[in-house]
Structure formats: C-alpha cells, structure tokens
Amino acid sequence: MNRIIFCKFLKKEAEGQEYQIYPGILGKRIYNEISKSAWKIWMSKQTMIINEKKLNMLNLNDRKIIEKHMENFLFKNK
Image 1 (cartoon, helix red, strand yellow):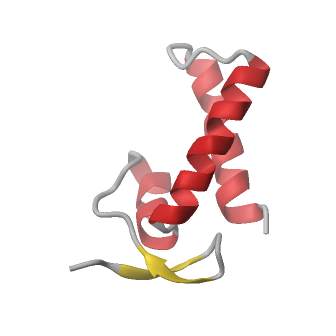
Image 2 (cartoon, rainbow, N blue to C red):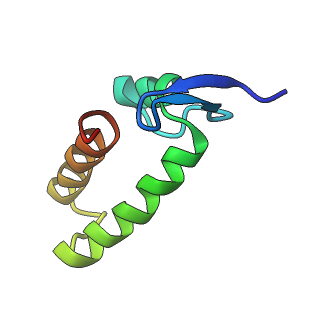
C-alpha cells in the first residue's frame, strides 16, 4: 500500500517514500514531509549542482555543501 503524505515541497498530498532514503534527523524529516516526485526533482537539481560546482561526493566538505543545498531546496525554496 502506498503511503500518502502532505508534501511540503509540492504543497499537496502525494505518495511518500517507501523507506528513509537519507540518514539522520534530516532523513527522517524528508521521509515524513517530502514525496517521491519531489525527491526526483531534487535528484535532478542535485546532479546539476554537483556538476556546476565540480563537487566530489567523497569529500566531506562537498557533501556538507550539497546537504545544505538539499535542505534549502526541499524546505525553504517555496
């Protein structure tokens, strides 16, 4: 059965994630408040950011940068 949540990014009810896709407190928030379709939008945006800024996801500082972008994009953008 699909889990329906109110997606804070899309501002409407939508299908939620099947499991927590990101670790920690932020991951729990994404699981509870971000839909599958909003997450797909973020994944496309994330790819653009990584490529434009030439980020290396093996580098801790670069991962922190992308996490900050993710939080801003999903929760503060709209």
